Amino acid sequence: MTTNQLFALFSDLALILVLAHLLGALARRFSQPAVIGEVLAGILLGPTLLGHEISDFLFPSEIRPMLTALADVGMAVFMFIVGLELDRKILRGTGRLAATVSVSSILLPFGLGALLALLLAEDHAPDHRLGFVLFMGTAMSVTAFPVLARILTDREMQHTPVGGLALACAAIGDVLAWCMLAAVVALAGGGGAGPWYLLLLVPYTGVMLWVVRPLLRRLLAAGDGTARLSPAALTAVLAGLLVSGAVTEKIGLHFIFGAFFFGVVMPKESTERLRADITDRIGEVSSHLLLPVFFISVGLKVDLSDLGRSGWLDFGLVLLVAVSGKFLGAFLSARAHGVTARQSAVLATLMNTRGLTELIILTAGLQLGVLDERLFSLMVAMAVVTTAMAGPLLSLFQPRPLADHPLVPAARDAQPPAARR
Image (tube, rainbow, N blue to C red; front, top):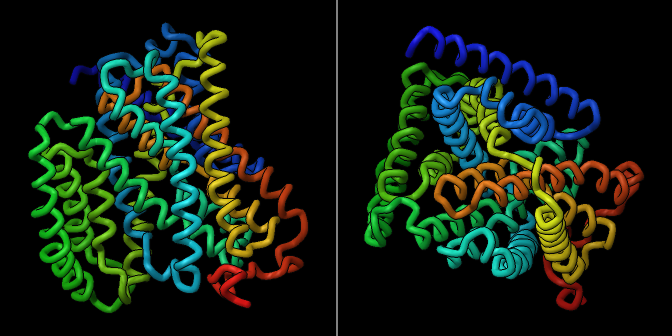
């Protein structure tokens, strides 16, 4: 790299970190997740407000591949943490209801998203309609488990019946969404390796479950009795998630699946403190450096400056389908199981939180060529709006202190009312 390139890279990184931190803090002041401000920081630096000339001056073309590489590492680390935090204990006491609500809140938005994709395919994906339709259905079905967990914590709802149910639904939905996206990638042929590469998933999965998982269990059990991993063990974990991502990328799936699955196979039994240590130590670098770079890289690709009437009409349709599909799917399913109307509305609002998970899926779709840049911009805007809606809607549906609300009936008994008589 030349001196000018190094100067531009370091200057850009400093700008990214400061602006993302400031707008993230500002978002929290307005009771919004920090991710809202951080994504807006990326959009502010992109062509939407500054125009292409100023944006290109701030982020020269020779620097952007380096930022994209850092953003990809940030995506991998984040997906590993998402997989690491998935625990069967979340489903305790709500398994049947959570599974039903999760499936309903995926199927309805998936179906509506697929129908919308058929309407938009002629303009945005004339050459690969099947992959586009399936991808749009999947993108409409996502709930951001980490952002939802943060919202619940900020509002002290994580130990309430509806909060626990929302976490369980989001956990199940995350697994289903990533499986669906993997199928979309396979059908779209994103890796370019041909359909035969799907067969390689069988030995990969076997090695992860019956070789890597036992090795990780021994690695975590070999600690010194404290709640911290040794430097060697932490290095092994970091190397493992990168190798797993590299393998899935090589066999034709996106690297995010390998990073996510490596987090899933991490032993969960009696490792809570060690897993918290991993999350804290890796998460510090990710949240303060890698993810802000990811948000900026997303924002630089978003251009809402010349949408025109047809573009804003498309955005309205995207937003309508995203909100109504997710809300109605969760609300109607919860009501069918005897959950009160207010708590069902709270649950449906929480399930509409998309956040960073949606951005990662959209970025994968753009990289694979399933989305064009115009629709990518609209979908990113939808992710920001639906995530920002959560706080005000929760205040609307839950105006009184949580202690004043009755327990969700389904939290006591996951069976439908007819079965409890």
